[in-house]
Length: 484
Image (cartoon, rainbow, N blue to C red; front, side, top):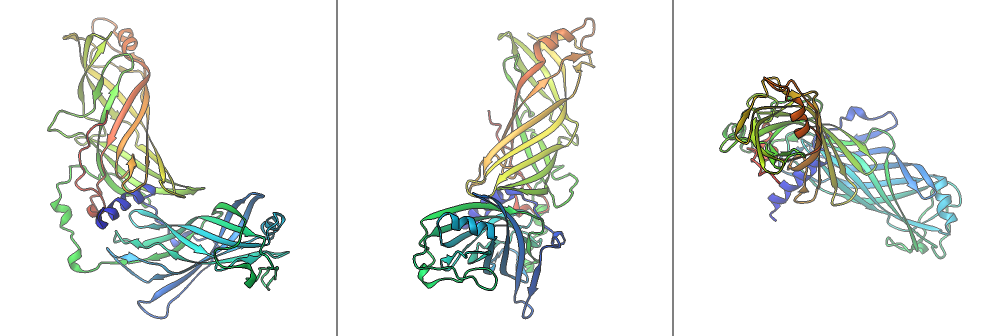
């Protein structure tokens, strides 16, 4: 796979992990200290951030102080990489945790730390900073123990003209324990033990290990915000947007928070459990299916090992929030053809909740998309003969529909992610019908042959396009082939 293609898929995957995650420096809590300095214009900027983590040790969850130090450039260039340097992660084990380790029979400890860092632009990249203690350290008889792990940060490619914000997320901690031979505890003035020459090197002599995943205990995890400058005037292409043949209505949605206006085509099938057959929810070619406009990742939250992103969507077809009216034929009693025009109108915005794993590949993602719709039918024919249902025939209530998509944020992504699209499925309950019939009451006929639970819906969303930043998305949006 070419480097350009890999970066593109990486951007898609990371957009699925949160996409609009823009953490403002003003969210830092009073308990967090950030110190930055630089020796002159254009030089690196050193940052030191104190954080509080909750770590579930075998003996119970402990509050742990963690300090992250790194150097960031003062500015970044669009299309280039940011490589934080001078990474050092310092973790202070509380006395209770140190005592529990000693009670296990261990006298030395070394550590490997993996810090998840969210680099946010228009999309979010979950990167990992790896640190490792230089030597085994003797466990003190009393007091706390500071573990200092120099490390290396993964580079981040700048894909947006927006400021790149780095925020600390989960911390995976591996403690390698050992007897330590002739090592003896030697508490220093801060209550931590000095490295013992007899305890071995970085690989450690531990005979046991303790692995925990710590989560931020408080808000205020922003490490740095790096402004982005354009590489040159020639790299700017504002006219490119006008050269693209974007579909009418693409991205026409109100953006809130740190969201991004995007659009994609959506098509699919819906069946009626009491009948045989399925309706294709798109017009005949060459007409295109409906669009779904999305305010992508306007809000996010961290949970243990997970990143949750919230988006809002709206259907768009010829200026209305609906799917295109379609003509569909079903079979009643397995042999009687019933043909009708089906109309589905969106009544409430589509609430989209994406839950992504961030701890380790393949980064599974589950997406729930929920809305309320109104279903109407008209122009009904039974075995080729018109059925006079009248103009007011309708279900007695609206329908709540939830579609679920599942995927993996690999390179390339598998299954469904919001930016790359894919299948979403669910089941709905069709209510009883009312006001059906001109010369006779047809409510019982339609309710008996159509209404009820278990009606399967399988939609296929195409890749999304962001009109304001077409290079970072798939523009113009492709029309997906409906999966069945």
